[in-house]
Length: 160
Image 1 (cartoon, rainbow, N blue to C red):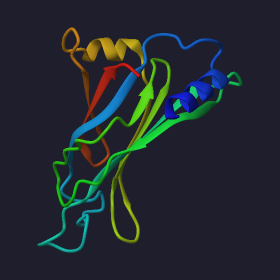
Image 2 (image 1 turned 135 degrees about the horizontal axis):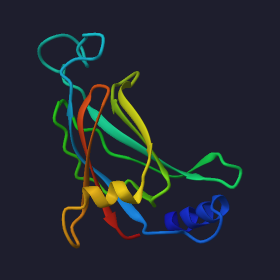
Image 3 (image 1 turned 90 degrees about the vertical axis):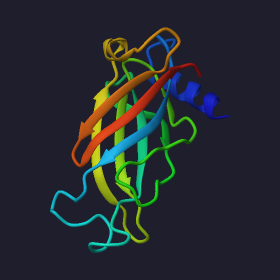
Image 4 (image 1 turned 180 degrees about the vertical axis):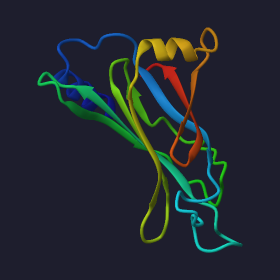
């Protein structure tokens, strides 16, 4: 069902058939700053339970015929509990093709109000994927740094 919805949305916003390879995105791991940008702890005060509970949200935005970006896929990880070095072992987050925009947000999951750790947007290019390729049939690994996210490791795998 998800693939069918993605295909229909892609056909609505593209100028024809899907060009290039399609990749599946996974968030693998991260490193989060010890403190918020304002110097406060992520959760509570010093001591027990002050580490964040990070999760990753991704949106894929394709270029519509009118020149605007339209969301075509979305996914999020489960929160990693009380850690500055999260590892996410979950399922695929989203499908993306070169030329699509990738919007990434990393959040500290809280009971009442989540805290934004960092956000980044960029258009995924084939050159970026080629530069990050590690070997034949190996997943493509990309490391990003933004805001209070000291490292976010994403994996791109060819396929549907």
